[in-house]
Length: 234
Image 1 (cartoon, rainbow, N blue to C red):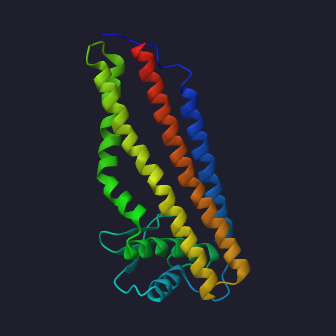
Image 2: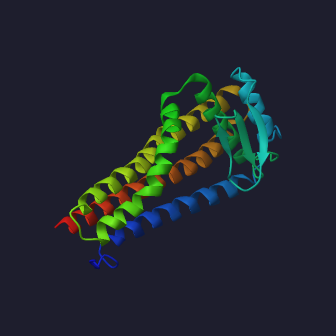
Image 3: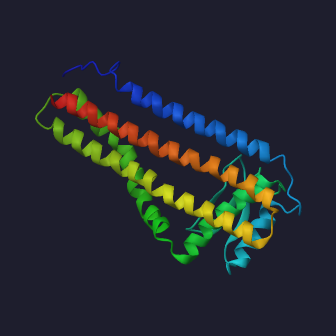
C-alpha cells in the first residue's frame, strides 16, 4: 500500500475557494431575505395567497400549496405536484415571501409546460445521487492503493462525480428561468408595486447566487480530483 502525501497539497486551495464562495453567497441570500422579509407588501397578501393566485392565473388547479417547517426550505415537488412554502413564506405578507412563493410557482409552471431543463434535471436526480455517493470511495481506492487497476478506479470516480457536477450545472437555467417567470408574473399582474417588484428581484438574485456558488464549488472540486488523479498517474 502507498501512503501519498495528498493531505496538504496545493489543490486544497480549490476546496477553500469553493467553501468561501458558498459561504459568501449564503450570507448574501440570508441578509437580503432578512431585510425584505421585514417589508410588508401593500396588499397584505401572504406567500400562500400569492402562490394560489399565480397558479390559478396560469390555469393550474391541481397543485396543492402547503406549509413546510424550516427557513428558506421552500420547494416544488413535481412528483406529487405539491408546492411547499416555509414558515418564513407561507403565512407572511412581506415582499420577500411573495417573491419566493412566485419563484416556486415558476417551477410549477415549468412542470406544467414541459420545460426541458426541468425534465432533464428530474431525470438526473437518481444518477447524480448515485454518482455523488460512489465517487469518493472509488477515488480513494484509486489514490491510496498501488495496482494496475488504480487508473480505472480514478476514471470511474471522476465520471461519477462529473454526474453530480452536471446536475448542478443543469440546475442553473432551471432556477434562473423560474425567477424570470416570477418577476414577469409579479410585474404583469399588479400584485406588487414597481418598487416592491424591485425588492423582490434583489431577493431572487441573491438566491440565484447560491446556485451559482454551488455549481462553481462543484466544478472546483472536480478540477481538484482531476489534478490529484493526474499526479497519481505521474
